[in-house]
Picture 1: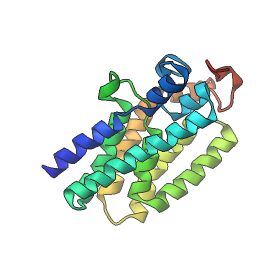
Picture 2: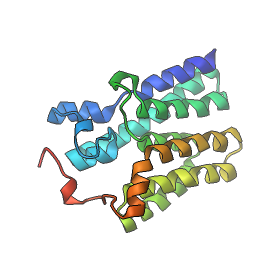
Picture 3: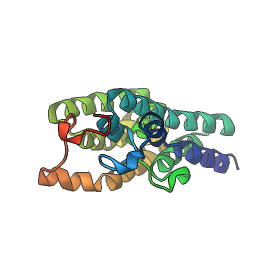
Picture 4: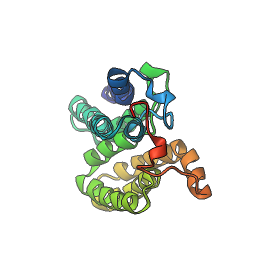
Length: 203
């Protein structure tokens, strides 16, 4: 019963779309009707600028950590519930019940979940991801690098075999949500970070 309660709460926490709420508050827009149409940190950055983009990134990451922390408390530290709470926070972000199941791609929330599973795995994957994005300016490519490295790092750096196994679901979610980005990357059509052609109703 504790597991069920934990994952339901995690899904509801994940379903809070900070990108949508912040865009409505400061610009009066539905972020899903601008830029890439994605309710996430990267599109918020493109449409509204650095401040809102960073704020959404932090809040979305905290959703994952909060969900896992609550699951830990409810279940008395059960590692399976803890890991699946992170998964359901990402599911909520991607398919939020409060916003017509139209959410983001889950990467910011994944960052929080990864941090909760293993700070060291998170740090290593994040550093490599930042380097990839800095060199290529493709956020989508960096995101895919992060979720690809995560299960491998968790396998070597954690004592709970459930963590790398569950993180494979995170990888699958990310690849599914980034399918159009993958096509664009292969075709050389993916938009780069900082491309002025991407900006915004506020400019």
